[in-house]
Amino acid sequence: LAGQIGVLEFAGTGDKLPLAQEGLVGAGGSCDVIIRRKGVRKKLFTYRFQPRRGVEIIPCRGARVTVNGQKAQAGHFALSGALIGAGDVTLPMFRDNPPDEEEP
Image (cartoon, rainbow, N blue to C red; front, side, top):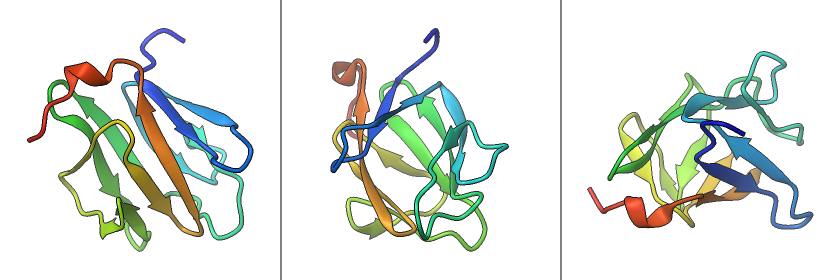
């Protein structure tokens, strides 16, 4: 996909959800990345890729989102290999070009 920065992957099945430069993740049909699993809200979080910083995770109101076990809040950045917890699922995030990322 043009503009794809990486994927979220389901550990048990290996199913991959492509990530564009930015988008909305959740179970709702209007989401850019749709996760149809028990306990996943219609709108979980928005994200946007920031060169040399990683992927910024911005939880939606009332959503439980973690990055590597830490509660995510606006401005939380995830690097390649980070574990994104959303509702009852945990998904590793992999970037297509992780060397472009640097610690903030």
